[in-house]
Image 1: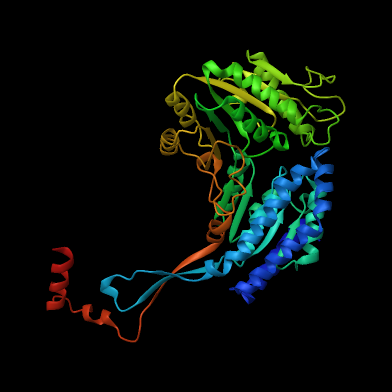
Image 2: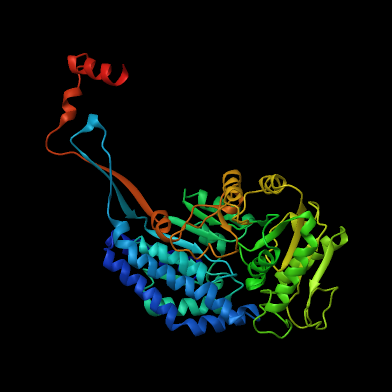
Length: 476
């Protein structure tokens, strides 16, 4: 059996199963979400071990904090609310069409494809899947080639808790990504880079498949002049080094008041030293996923160095480090590195970094920082550090981004009652919580007229007194 046929067979089976049950009850959906939650909890240790194997070194706490806990919390939130979300939403009926009842009926879409990236393979599979199941759909998940062990574990889990005509997981060895994207899905979810997102959207367009794209981008962190620098540096440091910067909403660069650049470097360095007093053999210090990603980051760093950037590699314990190759020997671990004096000609300011390299850019006036952000593609996340509510309101009104977090980093993503999604180059569509239910449902407008038909009074022939009266009332 060919890989393409395997996808076709599972897809057709899910289509038939959906046609036989096109509107699962609230209890059915809750039961499906229960199964997903039980599976994640049963396999939690295997997920931790699998991620560690895939990354070469993946901090177990990061897998629990960023993948397992938010997945389970999202599932529980949907279970708690899905019955209410499913109720038809009553709407107003125009006076000309009375008596009648208008409502919006939320209907499952059908079979949804989910393309999962490698950086958070559990959460970015389970998160969309929870929304898909809560909306009453079926799903096939396509895993990344970079996380084969996690893919095997997720596939094993779903086979235990779901029939393949309901939820199926395909590893990268079971078909190409292009074939997957070209399938005639009722909806397609892709999380990954902007460049690949464009390819996915082109593939989906041939079938007019609606897409949700979560694409990342260069998410800025802006520090206001009055914000305590120690606090800002520590919070930015955590957001940057969590999963070693391999996060779509990691702070990609910092805009710092010019007179406080040295202060930021001082406190950022101190924060990294507290979090990771050692790095080379520290099991909490996550590795870059593979050689390909390591060489990509090395190229960014070498390019910045050649073009005049000041490179500050942070190595608190002064462990032997190859500064030429930017790594510790026999690993894909690289030092958290600050880049000063960067320019737009550097790759570091042109592409999403997706690693522990952090450009720090000075600004003189708040308006300059906002103009800097607005002159670039709209980011998935924007971080702003300021306790002045007036300045916060100004920033919210004068910038566009997928989401905003004030006075911290990353923490907005796992908020179950907030939508998550990009804008422009950082994506389209949104999910999480209620927005996920809406995203994976068809909001079908329904008008119900009773036995009495008021519409007959305006039937032809026209020119009757009632027609003239209506025109006078509504058109003057």
